[in-house]
Image (cartoon, rainbow, N blue to C red; front, side):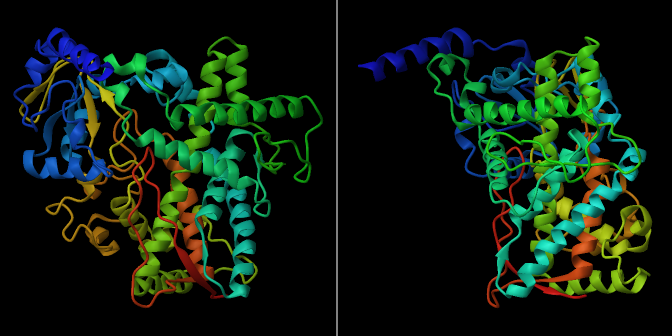
Length: 512
């Protein structure tokens, strides 16, 4: 009986709220795209890997097409030229975030990623003040130190001669880098408890990337049972709140040395307080607290922005590093080519193990090609973060209505056969003609992995430095070998807010 009552209610709601064509749908109706079903739109066509369906639609309908996600009218943009036209040439109309119901439920969209207008401007200014190229260069010693710590762990695995997974180590590497920018602390590689918070991050990105049906079908929200995405967010917030309290406590004391510890909370082992070494103890947390005390932001914005930086900084660059090691192990000829260029082009003292981004970047042009090819093949954000149009705007011969959700089809943009011949193959050399100086994508590279326009990735300069330094150091020091002589390592990731790399086993062999 309850089933029939539910069906009856859905039918009534369809005729009351969905059947009547609204202004957005009327304007967007001239944009090509797949036909949707009543109430659910095209949601039934999203499978395990929705990026594949978006790619198929691009191949059928072109660079601009419309889809309906429940009652949310959406337009999908594919390819650097059309994405630039929208997010650079018409930035005022396309810049704001589309604030989905699930994100509003989490934090009211008062965070850095989800906010709009003056709040976003304020939060972005705070975070960027600690992410400038000058600041990143001054923090390079921390990245070098983190590389040295990771190499000590990998050296032990070399001695064992057994294959092992690198995923957790790479994620902890990136976690420590972002924790220094946030709080001035880092975690130990030796304590297994640190895997707890990393596993939470991985799960959060996985569940957050899956379609939350109530985002798009409002009538089911009263009956919606919260999934793990909603359950994990308070756990992360609790961890961050504990770190904030520790930070405030330590700032009230005499500055700590690198060996002094504070409690991590939420199941993680104790992190170490780091010293910049240049007398500058500023952190993103310090800037956020200053603005909070000045009344510029609220406490919920402070915490949720810390969560953004904490999650995004951990599970983005680390994924790119893991994918790069998989690709190089599957293509040993290109791994050898990269190693030969590092060995022949760098004049490093014997006791210096880490390749420094600030010193050696221009000396290893092939590494720049490899990194860009990794960003192309394995973009961390497959479909970007949704935006919303603030006015009717014409793009590519079509008018997109005000209030439309806009999706950047990054995966399909990077897999376009016309732009990138043999798009599923790992070919770093494809970028030689475009030059190596544009690491961030766009322009002649046709890459959009960091997004485009005023809401592109805020941490791209740090990602560039971190990725370059660690990958160059690892390839200079180790050979990464596929244990199987018959099958390549699996390079098919898992869809989520961030594209998750598979967990492979590697043999690694010391070069030095």
